[in-house]
Image (cartoon, rainbow, N blue to C red; front, side, top):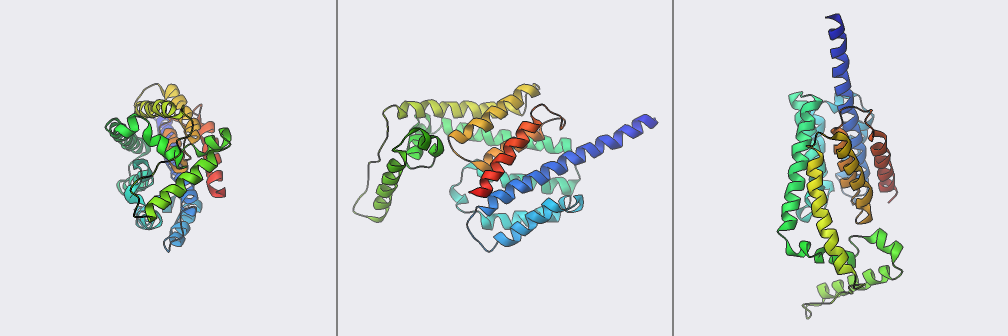
Length: 282
């Protein structure tokens, strides 16, 4: 009986340490993201609260009031959330989950279950929306985002000498359309003839990967799940630098691991640190 009594406290401590580590890492990601947001009066108290949580003891991170404060200030800092993609709300979801966890005093296993359902529903809805949107299925929406510099910017700049000039001219034409009421349409520069086919292929790859991301958090094959997540996190920046989304996906994947000694733990940690360093620099 003494041996069992010695093991159980250590197991509980390990669970608490894992959740503490995830909360702290989430605050660092959120801080990096908030610093890049436009100036607003709510930015100073939010940044102060994030710093406080990062350097604090467990007492603050385990208090529901702390997460309630973050939930109150965060919406005032963010902009254009009325038209934001669904994954941009992951930050809010995380804060609500941690607030519930601290209120109900639930353990790490319960939190992992919430993560699974939260992320699975998010990816499932995103996949159904794409399947119901013809502009996504035929790739034209991605072509438009490429032509206006909202996606594939880093990769295109590296591969095409004239990409920057195409984007600048397209943005100028859109600006003219917006300001000149005599015009009701404009024609953007489409780039190479091969692009429509590539964007059609890309659209269906994204749909497939969203289904894979749902599979990742329910499959019993942990090694396969972590390998697929690692591939996703590494290659998505080629299309768009959704830094917060990528960090949170990696964070969610690490939240599913049974132990910190997981094979991909160090790789995930390194990727997140690289992303955060880039966010702070930009």
